[in-house]
Image (cartoon, rainbow, N blue to C red):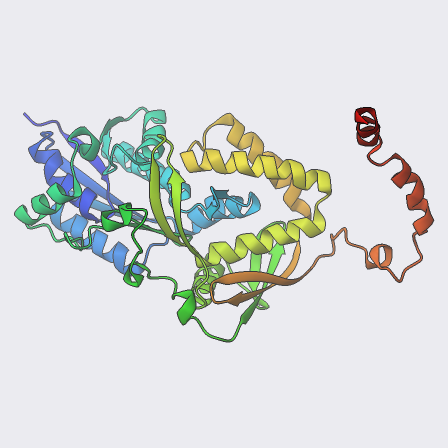
Length: 394
């Protein structure tokens, strides 16, 4: 007698594709139900995942949450300047939402077990498991439980005539959503290896980018990008368009050594053109409208928010508390930023805001609104204790 139903988080890639026969042959399940969650992957990838799921699984669902992903996960990340060890988070933001959709289908199907194709060395297993366990689901993870290698998986897929795009020559693991694209695995695991240009899909090489700089104007309302070059757009449409503009200028590549949650160091390569530009513009606008004290404290909050977001701990009470503080600061982050894109770089050329704390009348060397003599008293006391300490040493 079989074990009934299991619901599988399904991307259509190598790992999740071979999970379908494994869950039947190795784990003894009667029905494998696959769920592909659309968080802004290329349309062709979603179509392939849908077709493959219908072909190899007993039942398949494709769930479109692109707009929800942008509104509930990416926009808060922009407000928090969300980055981990120097790069804009993408995969980490999408995992909790994908896991929640898997749980919904499991409840609908009357299943108490869910499965994913994560390895035992990466971060995604923790992000998925956190949501699944919070929902009281039993979890199966064939890759980590069977200690499988990419090499074995490719052979297993070939034996079972499961079509996969991964081949032994290019065994890359790629994850995409509308905010970010990550590439890892194979020869890229060697941190000294120079990656070939054909691993990139969203960005041209900076050396091949146009010789003429391209300027973009981004309008923000309460920390949210609402217009690009004067045209009002939904956040999702704005991100999609900016991905193309920034990508053709070689903006948004990261090749780095990253510290995973488990403590492993890993070589990770990312593309995130729109994210790179939007975060740079948002940070700059914050410096115009927030006070020195707000900026200093928000930097600490942003770092902790990003750490929790990277781990997928979106239900941690501290995450909600940090988000509440960040939301309060964003009430004044309204304005316009002009950014210049040139051969892989983003440079802010100008910014303006009705909430700006900058006063040319006060700061100008040609203005007499502030009497410079008043600074003498401030200067007299400035660094007093340090001066006393230095004199004591004498």
